[in-house]
Length: 239
Figure 1: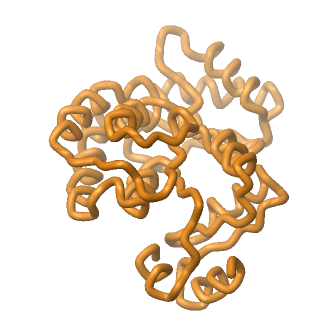
Figure 2 (figure 1 turned 90 degrees about the horizontal axis):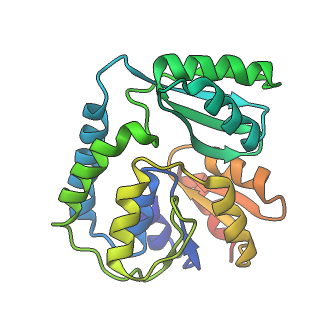
Figure 3 (figure 1 turned 135 degrees about the vertical axis):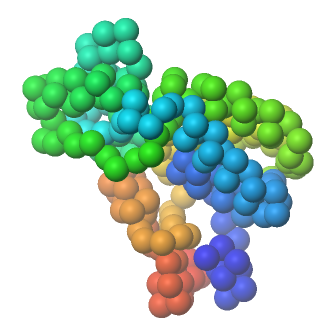
């Protein structure tokens, strides 16, 4: 979608970002990571994260209708010596938790008792973006050490620190920490809006992120480029 955007004369963005795995796509779009390196790298990352926790021992759940502080409290109460943490802070009232399966189930029940509208287990292969992913992060660090990263040609705001880095070593470190740290999407969108973002265009299948962005920063116009028609509409919207 990004290549199609450029080929069709789409405007050059002032800032790019990606949600979780999408951060690698953002780095490719910004010229910091070569596409030929990104493809095997994300495959390796997926394998390392999958292998970090035995099948069936981890879980993730979507908690709807509860604010972050209440979700954090539910996780702390449910932990009982196991890992359960907020993993994706996606939008107001939409937070995903991850960790050991029993702890995630306990946290889901506690969240509902605290007023969550819903708390449902997600059909995922591993508990991403929580402390259980530290072994995967160690393997990822070793792999990233052999990957060339350069200063981005477009600012990339990252998931883990909600920061823009020019230094390739800082980018590398942020990618490692991202594996076991929460995706701070609410703060990320707020930071983009504070930098003057007027439009956000989601490049990829669907328009989930564009919708979440609109919920976080209502003043920002959202769109997607997931097929030829939506690509044309998005290009026209930012001219």
